[in-house]
Image (cartoon, rainbow, N blue to C red; front, top):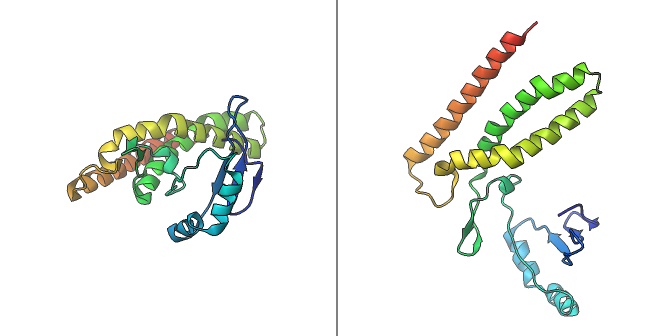
Length: 189
């Protein structure tokens, strides 16, 4: 999906993504499941569906559990998208992949751009583009595979497994801090 052609705080309208695609997408936002159910059962929605019956071929209801849930997909469950891990695990995984990404880019690309006289606001923009791309297409899929034993919903949730996963993530944090602490110490003027 590209940028919406129209939006409010509660809905967005997206045009087709290609010449071959004739589907428009409307995204509605609800604060609670109760509000969603009320809309799905409302006379207003039924009236709109009746008016658009010749133009609307179907609809799909999906719940987005967190801002990061797109990075945590573990296949289908019973014909529906599987649930994402709890938000606290997602946040831990994003930090695990984001910190080294930002540090490496800061020590390499950002430094080269800054030394080359590129304005700081552009250096940060380029860094953000590279960070998001690296996380989305490389690091988050890798982190999901390595930590699947701890992240995948439906895997046995023993206390031992939970503790082992959290301890491993914390150990990876410590290793990253050690590596970049030494790197900073070695590159200090």
